[in-house]
Length: 333
Ligand code: SAM
Ligand code: DTB
Ligand code: SF4
Image (cartoon, rainbow, N blue to C red):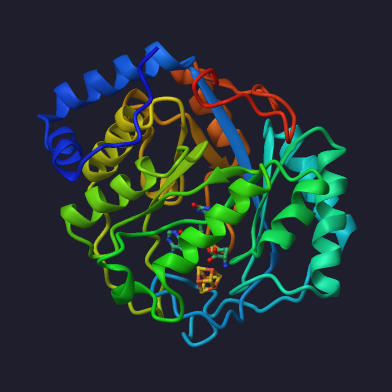
């Protein structure tokens, strides 16, 4: 197994990122095989439990209230609908369910009580439960942990230097502080970013440095391709070249060898061959099910056909232990 390092420099990461493509993929595939079951891919499914009307100004987001994106605003989804969606996802092969809310931060109110109930209910279906609800305090993170939350998603999205161009209503430090609160509560961390926001390659490298220099690497690192949304400031961004996704995934795999690297948003625009390249480069997870939060995604059936074709197997839930007993990164598979 590869030694896990937390002191990667920008120069080292840039050197990896700029390696000739086939050498880069070969190296990433080698690291992948040395550290993980390379044919095993986690299937995670998303549900938007509270949609739209968000007060933040994230320039990519269909759910920000200030942009006219045509997203229907929905109040909190009832628990029985969440359970039905979770059961459907489980039947489709998902071992993880991620519940997303278009909130700036969690507030200690009735809606949070409802989320806590949902976490307990999904946990009892024997699925890994994840939430992405915006900023969290230490005590809110602890409440989620006590309810059995397995993972918390909170993306850095871009570099610290580029952050103000994308979001002005919160800071990079706010983001890092929530990640700290999640860690303190012993919930696993899911944090990554978006490619195609108009960021420079240096921004991508800087974001990867921040992620790989955290006291522990995030257990999951989602790499999203921007889904350009009409009405947002980034509506006219060109589609991300597939090779940029491959380079990001491969570099993340090499510098965070034991983490799950997720080929996240943007798969509807990718062919099976392009996705196969991403798996070769070390991707070990996808979001599956017809919808991400508000935008389309390949169906479970389409993905199952791809798994069959490529010889991939879905990762089982709790491979590294139950919530609160997750094996240390150094030994995790
Ligand atoms: N409101 C919470 C937050 O911002 O943390 C949780 C939900 S938010 C929609 C979760 C993540 O979805 C964002 O951090 C961003 O990385 C991703 N995302 C949102 N819109 C996207 C888009 N158009 N394309 C790609 N990724 C997107
Ligand atoms: C992540 O990294 N990507 C997901 C999940 N974590 C929450 C969200 C992608 C959202 C894409 C736009 C939408 O469907 O609204
Ligand atoms: Fe709100 Fe999250 Fe969208 Fe930003 S990314 S506008 S915080 S839902």
